Image (cartoon, rainbow, N blue to C red; front, top):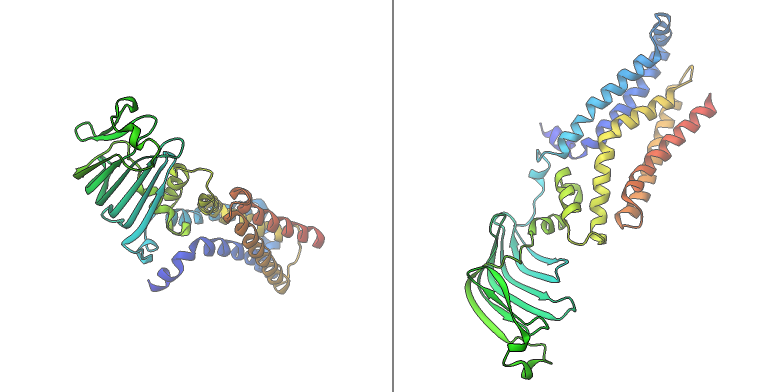
Length: 327
């Protein structure tokens, strides 16, 4: 059991390597022991054997798929601190600051929220001791103050009954002449509990962004990519790359089995030493090219799908070229 726990984080790489070595060594020993000649004499098609290996690699792909969509083993050994400072910026001109946030309880402490209008001027601010998030009721703020600023739209004021922000028109604000040119609050409202329906930013996506993309499940990666407010942000680049890699990992066993079949195709006799050499060269080419392209894709300089497919294409092309030269 301890060996499984140790190897489980690397299972998406172990399974394809097993398929690769298994395919090549099967043909090596079939040829070395003259069993390949016997199979041909029995009118057994090479395509039948190849298709059997491809089918086995498809079944093996189910293991990385299970790992990707489950919390088994891997999530239990990733220890995230219960309290982290959290900063949220969205497209609604809102900036949220949490001194600490408990992900398990979905509760933040010492919160400050800055809301600006379309011109970047302050509309209102909210400061409170704590706040909790619920998918049903949204945010509930406790023990704080609401600061209103004068804007062209008027003065924003919270309505405790409707849970909405109501705007007092600018033309009827009696203190307009004194503070019109000053960027300072004109109203301060203290509260023990406050809910504002427009402040509905879901913190789960921002909490996921703070984690290592490699630790997220397939569904969590999808949620980050789809729900993150700023879709053009380079923050999403590592998550898009990991999302693309997750798809490639599902097909990696099949792809690498095909690469192995290309390597052993159209060759009458394969020496074990030369085969091991080609295997090592293929692994080095794949590793170096993957590190190069993924480092670029991780920074958002290259499309994520291009970054993850280039190492596979380069490695298969290299093996096909070696096979053509040998035959």
